[in-house]
Amino acid sequence: MKKWIWLVLLLLAVVVVVGTKGTAKNGFFEQQSSPVIVESVPAENSPSRESKPVFNELQVSADKLLTHIQKLNFQRYTIAQRSRTRTYITTELRKLGWAPKLEKFSDGVNIFAERQGTQKTAGAILVAAHYDTVAGSPGADDNASGVAVVLEVARLLGSQPTPRTLQLAFFDQEEAGLLGSKAFVNKTARLQNLRGVIVMDMVGYACYTAGCQKYPTGLPITPPSDKGDFLVAVGDAEHLPLLNAFQNSQMFPPTAFNKENSNLPAVLTLPIPLKGLLTPDTLRSDHAPFWYQGVGAVLVTDTANLRTPHYHQSSDIPATIDRSFFIGSAQIVLNATNTLLENEGDLATQQ
Image (cartoon, rainbow, N blue to C red; front, side, top):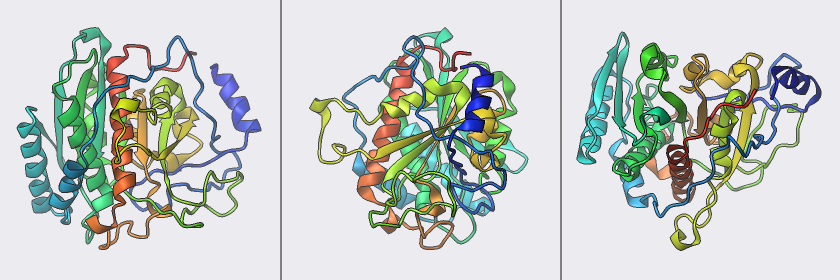
């Protein structure tokens, strides 16, 4: 789609602001003072360029996901606590046959690992989550839930040959201002082979009573639901095929249905034009630094404090994780990741 068409859409369409999670934020969906904000539209389909869904028998393990949440049930804020977290993550990766690397930067340490694809020219897909917390919170949803899903992706896709390379990253110091992901993208050489990024930041909380899902006052659209039972995928409009993988991720082969994944949560996909220039509240998690390096990235989230009362609180503990929603969210991420790894098409929107 031509850039001028986006400008017309911005002026004519009813819009939605989606704020990502990060430091000192007031909400995931954040109303702007500017009258021009983001449009909520379906990601457009481009049959010749879109990543088609790849169905497989891979299923996430509820037990393994929930075990990770329990093992990470401690504050991950101080230097010592974050070091303890890194030990857990790297130990789990090594058990799965990965060779994780610690990448130090001025304020912390990221963890990086990769499994080479079968086609060098196909590029890589990065799956990532931050592992730190704010002070005083054990961060079961924020963001042990994201870490657990990355580890499950590592388990299920680590030994599966795919055209694209699978990369994993666990970012430090997200809560201090996206410091880990900013340090990661500063290594520009690694970005040349990167075709897309999936960042998870809070994917384990749901609520099912009317009015439990909050929105900014005066939001100029009819909200999709007043219940917090859906997953949100936020992507930059310059890479719609990447976002489209999440539109298709709810589909599942009938032979693989079981009690845990037969009812995957709905996915609300939100394409953000102009790299969030008009919507700075869409830039508050670890996907944002990739946008500004020209790399397509999708943030997957449960909308943070607009849904959960445990956001940045001591009550963000494993008992508050919604088992069914969390497992379904993990399966959706796995499905989308596998689709992107198997397909070699261009993930940039046709201009």
